[in-house]
Image (cartoon, rainbow, N blue to C red; front, top):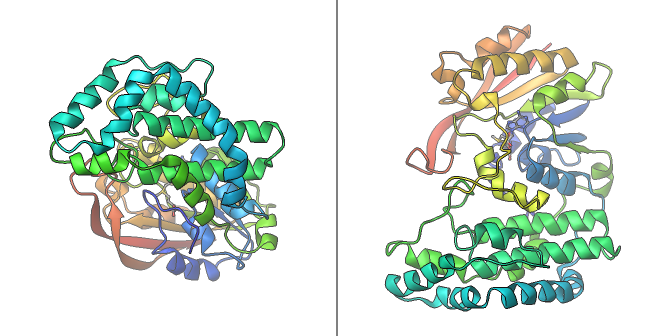
Length: 394
Ligand SMILES: C[S@@+](CC[C@H](N)C(=O)[O-])C[C@H]1O[C@@H](n2cnc3c(N)ncnc32)[C@H](O)[C@@H]1O
């Protein structure tokens, strides 16, 4: 059991090689500036102190739990016992207010033909969803899309239970965080998608089996299974001195001075023109729980972060600024970037950019890697490319 989370762009299969390169760098803390789920930070457990940073709330939550919490999650059996009363109360409140839709949603996973499924599905869609006096953010926004109506109610009711337990001091803030992280993990596993949150599957005769299978799974059970499977990385002593932050890398790097303890910065920036926030919006809503007004077919939040690394017109300047900012901290820079990344499309190579600022820069290795193409928005879900690892030293 590894206790890790894998998501778009995670570098679990490259992390040991990156760690070998980092081993020869300046002593000092490793700043994983675009940490995502923290594969490279994890490969440094017990070797170097780490600092994970990502602009997304959920990635920050993952970094905080897995790399900085000395204690770890509450046992799932204890959480089940504590959470169940509030969970059931919120579930009942949502069920009572949405009886017609709820009845249809319960039958949905058992539908055998598409006509049968569609009849129930349309019935649910036609109902106005009520959530008076209940936690109902997901029920009101995502029912019948990324999750079934009852699954949304489960997510809301777990979130309600976590908030109540934290409010009463029955779980610590860190145990709350682990509970939320596990809920995000469960949501990813059970979502009606192809494995990411950029879009949900529109039910059809062709995908009926898959949709009914996903809609039929219990978020509550998966939540507890996830809570039991997620683990902190490394030892408590190692985690105690690690850091985690949520910041745009640009602003973060400007706050780091030469006198700081960062010896090496690892950068794994976005590499396509698909904005990463498309893949995080559901997780962001789970963390923020702010009842956003969503739009478009993907039901996106209004405040999605956009990064210049994913904009053709700005990627070159974003890279130059990143390299200059890292260099100004006095740290070594290790960069991962695929051979078909957006920067190459605009006629620049990462090595040229590194050499523009650092006196020593090299392409250390190229590794064949099955890369995410950002959710098949370009056709295939993965593509074999060379992932290049660069090293720049002052
Ligand atoms: C390629 S992924 C990193 C994956 C990571 N190495 C892992 O193993 O999980 C890029 C990450 O950069 C984050 N990101 C995008 N733009 C950013 C910015 N300007 N500052 C900080 N993080 C950013 C995204 O949220 C995403 O998690």
